[in-house]
Length: 264
Length: 310
Image 1 (spheres, each protein chain N blue to C red):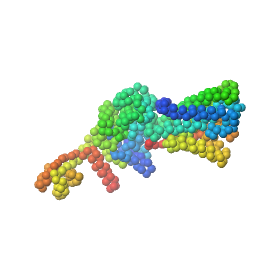
Image 2 (cartoon, one colour):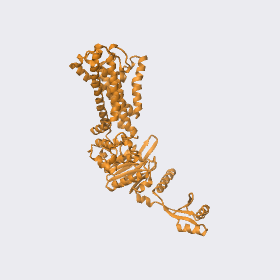
Image 3 (cartoon, each protein chain N blue to C red):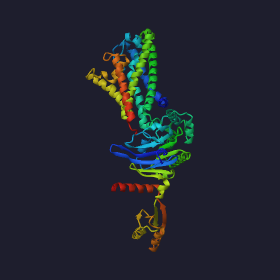
Image 4 (spheres, each protein chain N blue to C red):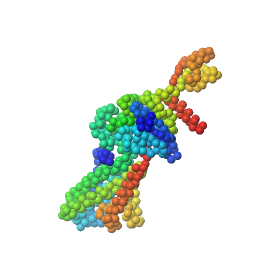
């Protein structure tokens, strides 16, 4: 498994991949944080996929430090879904999966190593996004009259670390959803289309006609988990459902990969 | 030859994809050391067989072993083998050296073997160039370099000369010959029979997923027939000579500008005599031996006929 992890890392450390994934990820974190800080004047405002804006009371609290990161989380999730999907689908479309399996025929170890490497890549990306969001929040808050005293307390710091941890976990589930769709379809395009269309746009449309139906959809569950629970789902329910989505994706991934003939 | 002493041994190996029978009750053994050809036309079942040997697809029925280990436990022999399966599957965005680095890490090998295999395949000077800039021949050589990592005892190469120009084919042929002479077993599949004929000592022929022949190439070529090719000076004499030879109960076939006669039952002297007595001057009278390709076509035709009569 360590061999598979290190081998995948040779691919992930490519400059082009780092630029094409970290670039948009940091850009959306930047935009989400700017929207969150500037939205202080109109609390409850709708910023679309970036979520509702928060008032000064919420922003100046200990948890306000990472509101920018939280509002960017859906975009971060989609980008990581794409990274998982493109990397896994490429192994099938290039035929490199054959060579990987000839070198490491223990399929479970190979897949576990690849997923661990992608997970480490995700963790680094989210930590960088968190650092950017926190730095930007500190830089912009005084200009908007947002007190930052609570942010620098131990509650603020631990809260920020916890939010980054939850963002990593939620983003990993996004990635696993992408990997699972690729494992079924062998197509990164299908995974990204399903991720963006099926998991984001479709629930948004459904919500217009039947509110509450989509509360247990992946996007809603992961959002609820990220903020430690909301009106629709308690923190513990959201955490359980997030774990359930992750386990379900992993089970499908491994089951298909262990059983499928490699004819590509 | 026992399964333990064979490099590869398969017994009634079968693979069906739904109703399609890709490989049907294939049985053969190949010895250790040297270059062994695995020959058949496109779609004969070569790649499917190789994928079963490597554990990439599961056999519908039958058994097999690689270096004495069953094919359903590929982890037992994977460190002793190297493989290239169909087109060279490489990471085009990585350099040649990084492609090799990836596989050294996966196999738990020391990175200093990279330069060694790059030298063996003659790619050392291009090691830091992205694979996307390589020619097809260079990609094939890099794929072979990957298969050479870890000093494997057995190389399984599926169509390593596919898509190469004549110079590239010669280059790969020489490389495989050298590897075979250095004590490795090279199991090389190809649909280019003329290419295999120049390279191997042992050959396995398959067609439509079934075995046609397995054994020494020399034994197979001993079965090769002789053909007498006759070309009259005047093209108009072809039909006249054909009739005359036919009257003598000779097996005759007419190609564009010559007559082909089964050389196993007729002597060239007899043909020359008949032509001479009839006042037909010959531009050419030549005895040709069947090539591997001719033998293969004849054997597969026989297999089809037998299959039809069954």
